[in-house]
Image 1 (tube, rainbow, N blue to C red):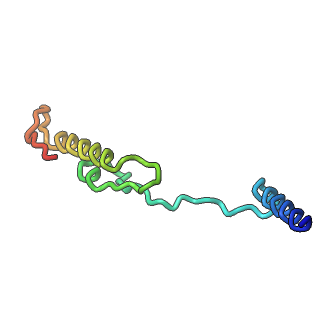
Image 2: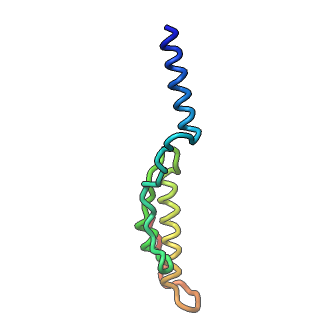
Image 3: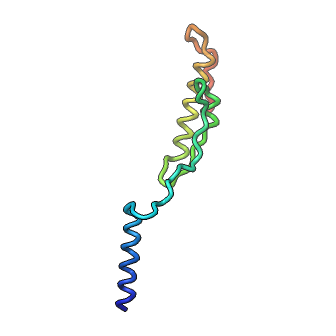
Length: 96
């Protein structure tokens, strides 16, 4: 019985030493989630926002809220893209 208790304490001590940074360290962590793909070399356009998809997370945002905001932003950008130089909107149609 004492032998196993000492063995457990030594094993926990070894784990603590490795976790504290001594011994051979763990491999560096890297982010394997895909990035939201938006063009970085030009301004965003409405179509870019319509095709953005975010990675899922356990405690992330509600997908319906993110999709609703992206739809609104895409619509506002479309309105800006189709307005004439004087600022008047040519097509103010919003289908949600």
